[in-house]
Image (tube, one colour):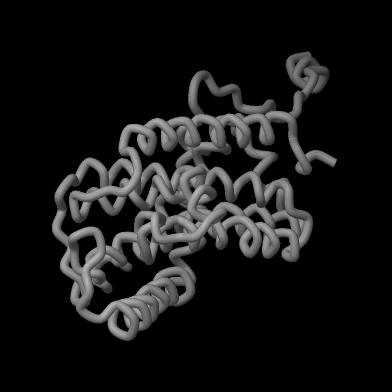
Length: 273
């Protein structure tokens, strides 16, 4: 009779795990995946940006800048923070955007959506993974350009705030681009027509007051200008724009881009078919 009772019991399939609060295991796994993903191709993600930064230093500082000064500091010291920030911006954007686009292209979005992760946990995992790459590559680029430019640390808080803020913003922008894009041509369009113009019209290699109109006015509304200007202030102690506006804009963009990404994950924008 006991055996018959056991046989009559209903066998239920395994139930989804119920998480209260944050799924720390899943969040850590997603973050480590994003970090290990760029770490496995170190020659592409680390060596290539360093070579690019050194080439810029060679062309703009040695060949063009010579011994002249900009804003009261040596041209090399003026340019170097901008070159470092360029690596932070481009690598943070590339990490999250390429991760999502490749997952779409290979039909692997289910690997992200199936685990019990909330939209906020997806946002944090992809965003912090992208920021880690941006900050790490920026640090490596800084070490590479130090022999060619004197980089004092006038305001370490500004270096940390604007560096991390820029990495998070571009990581979130990369998430938006990766979810929106349906092919690599779309991503190339975002990079060539949005990211690159904003970067090169941001005062990386010059004072924006020397630009002709309408580029001078455009640069004053360019958020990348305030990121680079604040980051440069952290090193040389001089800034061209308003630091208060730069801090407010950075915090505002982190909140805005983060919220947009959260809603895209929450609604399943171009994820659920």
